[in-house]
Image 1 (cartoon, rainbow, N blue to C red):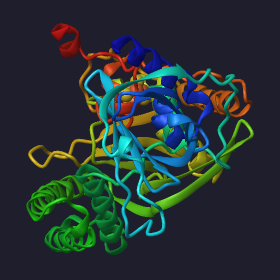
Image 2: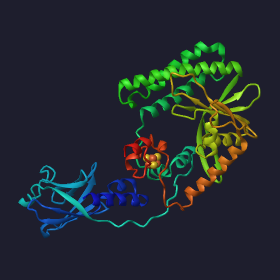
Image 3: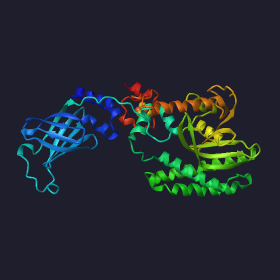
Image 4: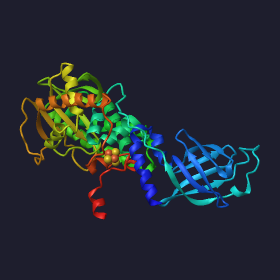
Length: 429
Ligand code: SF4
């Protein structure tokens, strides 16, 4: 029984490229099942991929339709009876149910031999693997975050961007991020030119903006306690944000010239779009800074972030850079603002754009560093290359990453046979 199961799981993985997502999860039930009725007589049930089922019990010939329900398929026969084939430990179990008389009032009662069967069953013939077909991205435009996903794990990109495999219902962390972004967008509608003299007003205003923005998501959080905890975290973090804003304005006054700014441009002939959280203009030089709010984990130093750009694991700020340069801005700084941790000061990761970057080591923990225009140019060229690969129909496989950290928050973990083991899992084996 275990051998059969392993074989069918292999088919699921192999067939995944050619199937729609819903079907991919039920595929291990498709095929010919050898079962017994309550009298112990063998008969066969064929579960077909098109959603139909047939059986040859007692030579009668039965037809029906099946649906997937959790880790089981339930077949509703034309007689009104139901058969359920469910996973049971390493094997499978078949159960037959009497029809619901309110649903099938005209169907005569079945033969006594089928009143109830509860027996182990096995898939005796699995379907042959469908021929593999190349896949291509179908979206009308690309985004930096889609390319980031592909760089992190090609399998994850496949699940998310070609299968749309799991409905994203959001999480506490994602609602926190959405609400915080909204609050700061509203806040800077009022405070376009942050003045140190207005610190008190800014603190009061951001308090109200956070409360309002999170109030709009109250029902999204699982519990009232979770909602309250996230609001408090956001309020404390927002006050630290104002502290940083005031210090920055004292050092070098600036004006906010864009919030949630639409960015669009062609890269390598492919359309890209995105939204820039904030765009600042330095009052003295007129130079522009691109600002991205981060409510999740980010690089801990400027050198680490630059390395992510250089190794093509982050395209977001390079894309915004080229989009604003194309609009005529002189972009001097790329900045990530961490808004996750209420217990630490806001300490942005800032990269000054220079012709040739200073070569700090990755161990350099400074939040401030430089990035060369050549680094940004290489990122732009790579974006075009990746779009070409994803669009030209040459891809027939989407390998899983070998970096377990990419799997930490992956929504597709349960479907992913090939996911790499974490060090803890390796140790436990
Ligand atoms: S679980 Fe890991 S390997 Fe699998 S799709 Fe997600 S990120 Fe990729």
